[in-house]
Length: 302
Image (cartoon, rainbow, N blue to C red; front, side):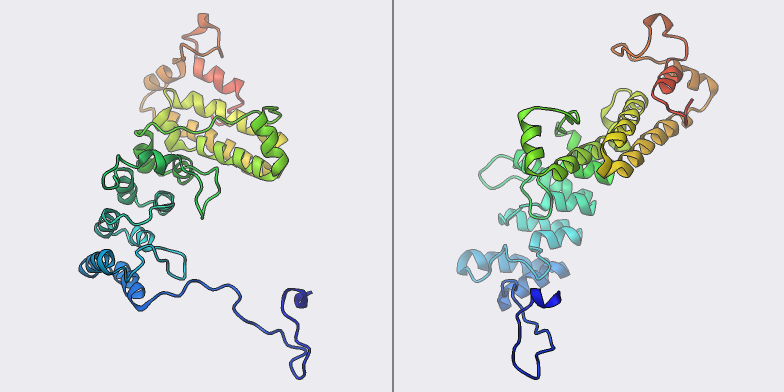
């Protein structure tokens, strides 16, 4: 079968050999561009600054050039956690692209903070574009910065993003017949299911729950139960949903384990969300949380 994917050779003595040649090559870098990226890699601030200034005058360097690994100068600076070089590059309007997602994936908190405060010369802060643009080369279109941060469960980065009032899409029902779901499922049903999983994976982040939920224990109970139910119908990702469900259950248990005394535990177990319809209001002081745990099959707690 291998011969089907390579150019055939009909002449002897190489008839039984598979010839190899480069059919897709990265753009060749000039000597100046190689020196520029090398300076960024080494953290040579002076050389980088000089190269950027000369590029504005002589146009001898494409400041958005990429190395053989597909990284431009900004991504290299992020990888090396060099915030000074990052700031210098941003001040010279290098292409930002998926830099925020890259910084989140690398969990470079300082880089995330710098990108969130980034302001193009003569323009307002670029926060809305950075947070909402999902058409990134290395990431699927459904992955947003807050979702990726939740996937990594990095508390500091999640906090930075939540403070910007970002949102996560509300997952639709499995059998949802809305135009968006029907269209997405018809185009690529597996990708549609994967997108739903990505949302739930973000929602199940302990750090996100702790930061954004008024009642983290109740949220973990409900989400754990919902994820368990999803594992029964989403066969392609059954194991993933079961793992996320268990993660929520253990998080709720760990929160309860933080109680320092039986009195604290009693207060927590008796607490009830005034807007919740899970329990009879007349039984407010009757171990409400424990009953919710039983309702949602939280064996680790009950």
